[in-house]
Image (cartoon, rainbow, N blue to C red; front, side):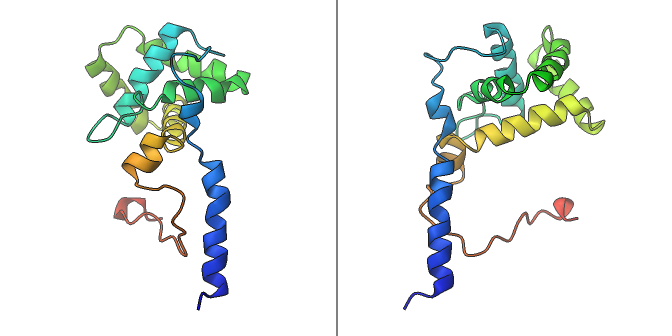
Length: 157
């Protein structure tokens, strides 16, 4: 017999399934009209996001269209978009290796632009089919009765 807790856990997955409806699928690269950034800026955002979540045996951030999700997310926040654009400018003429080194430096300094880029990249990626289904193997049909959180010692706090 199924317990009430199991039924509640199973029911809780249904809104999550609707919420995580693979946002990038709704902003296909071929038909997407940029809201905040130019085509060149979107290419740069894709490069920077790819440094954060690179392609491995699963698609990377750029493959998943994270740059389009960032554009869409920041279209509702003009002040944040302005800060983001200002932070991006220093990366425009850098080679990919230089971009990585600069990102590492900004991460070590806990720079606000790096935090915004990282947060938007991660949030965007894990709302896509590539992030949820391909990388994590989550299809929205498996309830999780409990979540143990991150098990990395460096993230315990």
